[in-house]
Length: 117
Image (tube, rainbow, N blue to C red; front, side, top):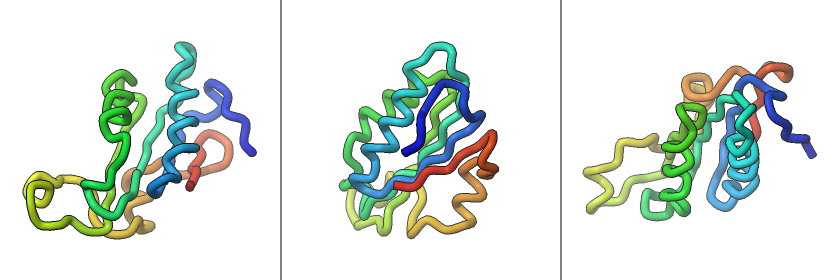
């Protein structure tokens, strides 16, 4: 168990798949709820398809209220044909080391942390 305290890290990267969102969302909400905290948080949230992304409205609202401290990249295994296929502009496929390098902070164990759920 890792203690989540304000300003413990400069940047936190989170990778969540499906229901693994729950602990990642708890970390993000805890850090964002403290007005003194300056931690930058980036989440890659993975699902099978765009229609399966749950709590998207809640996550997007957190992003909007975060003053730029919380960023989310949605990633799906595949984009089905239909409404979402034309509108999808997120990541597609499984999370790769290239995605982690491009979107998440470099984990150093001191200033930056990556958590996977």
